[in-house]
Length: 269
Image (cartoon, rainbow, N blue to C red):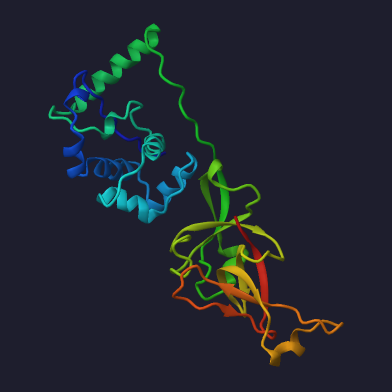
């Protein structure tokens, strides 16, 4: 069972003492996000996945930047952060104060008082957000790790994810290895795959070439003249040559030679 975050509540005049400039200088919001995430036992990648179920798509690096003070989430992103971490509805968790926060005994009494109000009908809390989780197979080995055996059945494990974060049509997940697909896909990120045998130019897919697994953009080029005979069909028409392209411009595109054992595993959703 997940450990619940502690919620700090405001006194009536706490908001009046709030100073945005001081909090920004102290990176108060970033530090509070980091504290709540750690209390929930969430890694940066796991928190990224949870945020996706609230309509926020950011990388683990971007979350780390929030926590370190390099940037701040937008108002909409901060609301999603609050929901994902099950924090105070009035955003008080992200507001500093010159007053001391309640100790454990104070929090206990405040919880009892809140329960009494609910029981008496004088206070009705907002309906709890229920997140539905599903188990999905995820490869223990990463694509682009230099092996195609990540698709072997014994190399998959079942992992729970918020149902809203898994795209329709996804059959399994594969972890990214390396930085060749930065800035869109990051090392350690899980991508969702829909099995298929063909892709359109420009679509991102999972491929196996000569036993090695790849996460790349699919492309096609006309082959060099010396390869025409190998790529010509029965009518003499020359077929395009598949090319695997990286988003990171530091990596050259890989042309797939006619004698390679190449196949398309699926489309990344």
